[in-house]
Length: 232
Ligand SMILES: [Zn+2]
Image (cartoon, rainbow, N blue to C red; front, side, top):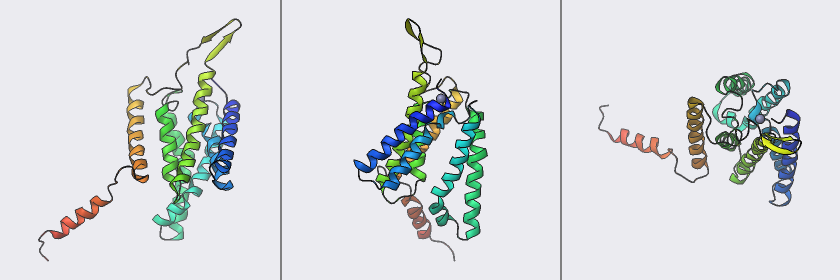
């Protein structure tokens, strides 16, 4: 079980490399590169959000709660009409992430539960792609993959730490294989995780234009309703 410091260092290194590569090799702007690096760095702590590591994790959640509303400001402007509504939306998002989200995560998962799993990695990455506001799909992809890499670095590190070196030979401890998994031991967290995964995957595929969204449905539905012979 790798500690907070190991996780944050490894994902920090990954983030630095990733952000640099994004700018130099793929022509993203330096700002986009830095932001994706930070996302990767922070995602390295994501699977341990409710764990007993305590304070540092709480701090990460504090930062996350502040950053997400900033990233969603454009969205809020679309939804809210008055300045007050936009501010209230931002406050609600902050509170939901800072307290609500970590509470729910803590209730839902036992340690090394489904948060340490491949489906959780995809949920986190796709959620960021969905909420990140950009006209360019490549930029959304950049941010999502950053989260996936940070998350993966955490899972790999936890796996690595499950190998114990006992002087003369290597042996696997109890936690071996529990981080890089697709399903957990408990039924309900599995069902919950996969339901969420299917939902965000669907939304992502729609957003990236892979499959057709339901936008046309309400429209044709309205047309059908309007074409009905109704009494005026
Ligand atoms: Zn962990």
